[in-house]
Image (tube, rainbow, N blue to C red; front, side, top):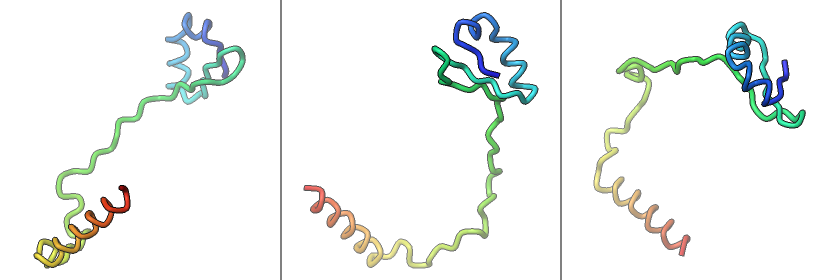
Length: 82
């Protein structure tokens, strides 16, 4: 259903109920769609430890050689941006 802004202001509760039932509720300004009312869905948060065993980390991730290589990449990037 498409509803103009003035009607939406007067019927917000009815429009939200329609969205909760799964209906498409489009808000229009001068007959042109500008917004959509959709049901809220809570974000799904991964429990702590959900990535355990799924990511491989190199044993030398914090070695002086690796740190020097990363620092060099930042320095090269800074020079290119000047």
